[in-house]
Length: 178
Image 1 (cartoon, rainbow, N blue to C red):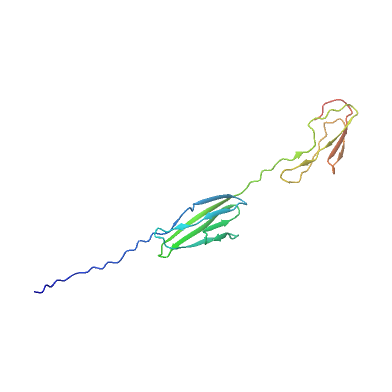
Image 2 (cartoon, helix red, strand yellow):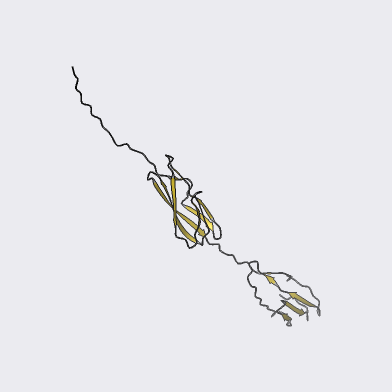
């Protein structure tokens, strides 16, 4: 005899699992001071080992340095918050995107007070003696220094040389003068 048998063959679609690339060290926010540069490593890995293609999107007035081969983003910006979008796509359609905020903090200049270079805190004189005070001052910030001189507590007025920042006064009577 002959045996007759029907065999059913079921062909199912092959399911390929493709995970999306994952950024390695990309943070949500980066903080720098004005004048500093931010360095962002936007490298990613793919669980299946697929090749990854990268893209970066930003709207800055000054273009950053973007090294696609080494996955490095370098930028020096002005004060404020700035957004950058990083994209990683594998060859099988896996896609990931991350928006990063770069916070550039404004450096607040603290104004230093001018300092007198040669002006003593006290001068001892005898009646009839003269003192010449050099009231030259400098400013650590490089700001222009302006001067006001008040000699209203002295019994007599002194001589003022504004160009050389000198004040000459002769003691005419005993006393303590501020």
